[in-house]
Length: 389
Ligand code: COA
Figure: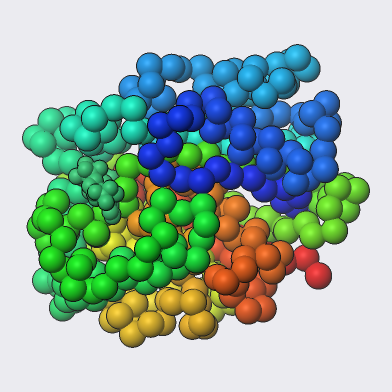
């Protein structure tokens, strides 16, 4: 296996971007990453693109070819592949690019993620997202993602004594981090009382417990480490990228309070690199709902099961703590254009490991972890990144 470096990053603002199409978003992010890497288009060997559901959101499929074409890469006939794993589409696209370079098959690849969600109404958007749950056992009975996560929250409260306030503290923290991110969808701080009083979506979760519906794109350029210095003085190493799966339906799990795919992907990542959770200073985890971040920080091994809520309320995952979680604002405040999310997480970690995250910089960040989830935990992808000294 060859060492792999990230040599360029690019992203768009996230939000309701009515003046930009999916192709505008994908091209903007991709070209920004290519410029950042000081690369010319004819040096790119392949394109991988994470996208969950362009067919349903904007009636356009064949997204790999579309972005290759409009960014001028079709001219060189490079392979362009779309990757889909619901909310983990971006993270999984990144993993395909990583494997292509690590195996020696390709030297330089662009990996992007894009989603354009706000062209459809709220009801249709909820229905499209619910297609990533189990249609036979969940979605057809009306179980939307907010509803499934509400059940998880109730069970976590019942089994571990997690309080409503602890769950809400995830949103307060992530909005605070988002207020320092000029690309975030929500750049305003919110108070605990506002989260507790926000309109109910699926009780106990309210509006401010949910990631929003978003448009946006993000991209990175991956390169064989032995060629990286030709393009940048600040390569970031991809230490590993792991993936695991679980039952599609929550009903078929032993416990509602764990995402075993997350635990297994993290264990594989730590085993492969010889690192442990205590080595990580900055993590971007999949907080599609406030309760999701609590599950994630437990399942990744940062906190014992049942203590994620208390740790968050205690400030142990905020900027300035030993471990900073979701410095970008996370899905909750940065936004969640589904296919882009797994790449946006990596972009944030690269900012941190290059030491260029501005007001939200984690001092001395050396190792970063990205955690991207599809559905209610049926797919989990973990990336471990390291600063190159
Ligand atoms: N967090 C904070 N503010 C939000 C928000 C969110 N998640 N969603 C919307 N808002 C704000 C909007 O900016 C808007 O504010 P404004 O009036 O000041 O402009 C206001 O709330 C109403 O927005 P609207 O678009 O009408 O909200 P909505 O009721 O249509 O949608 C949700 C709210 C929570 C239902 C929607 O964001 C949602 O479905 N989120 C979950 C997505 C999901 O399932 N993701 C998981 C995939 S696994």
